[in-house]
Image (cartoon, rainbow over all chains, first blue to last red; front, side, top):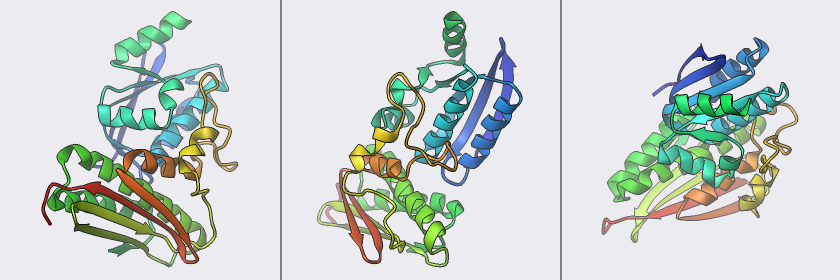
Length: 116
Length: 150
């Protein structure tokens, strides 16, 4: 399956919905979207990965790149993911300690708001 | 099989490998690991070929025998790009607790992970993995147990 991307603003936070496979072929599209959002002044991001079917190290790199960009503006990038096969990749690479990973978009937004 | 080193073909390669793994008797619970590990190995090979030998195909061997399903991904990029001697150490250049900022990523694009991250993922996923640097390039041999008698 290809990669589908969508985004919307909710409570002042930009939610990016990702569906499909994030790999060496499709990851550049996600990278471009994250860069575009940051360039447009969106520094509080939640990436909803509940419909992601595949994620590799290229995708991890894009997410880390996005995190780096928003943090340069004192922003944040949180993830929504409950799929064990995706979470496993974050654990293997130690990135569970870097990203805030939540069960739902609501939870991610609530957590972010409470930190403000 | 071999394929032109283009990112678009990596998905096909990992799907084929997963299908052959299933047919060879690899347990369903392990197929995700096969898919990801083969995808990582092929992605790394494609990037190496694009940098050094874009006209050379990437080679993937899929074999099942003696209770193991084995995948060997071989590139033809002779110059070393990875420190294959310690793939598990590669994430050291990755964000650590508390900073969240990669300090070992590409100087050209901060979104691009260090080459070794893919190798670290492979090392963490494959039931058995061996890296071999030859004059021709890097060979990554991975294997998983099968339930089929062969």
